[in-house]
Amino acid sequence: MPGSSAVAAMKKVVQQLPLEAGLNHAAADLKQFGVQNAQHDPLLTGVSSSTNPFRPQKVCSFSQ
Image (tube, rainbow, N blue to C red; front, side, top):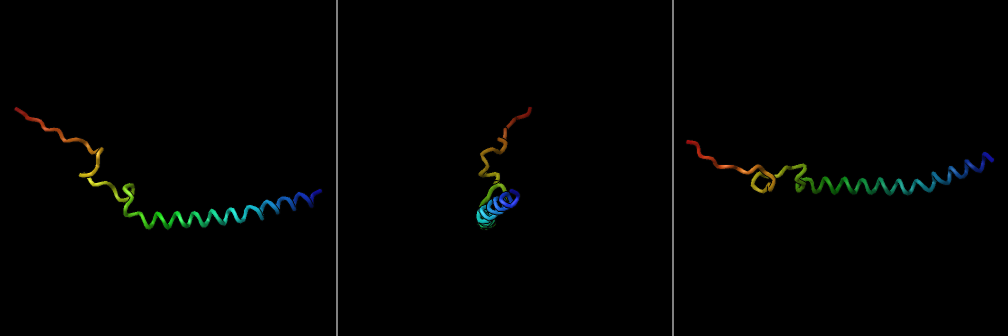
């Protein structure tokens, strides 16, 4: 019956709506967390050369 398949499809839509609303809320919380902690994120602010363990090592050389 075409009517029963439409009802089943609408039931799926109704069940999906709260899940999507929860995802939107979680995304908003994640965005707020990122904005609040951006000043502590080294990917956004960079790492100072004095505390960067991966900086190139300086080599002393003597020329004659």
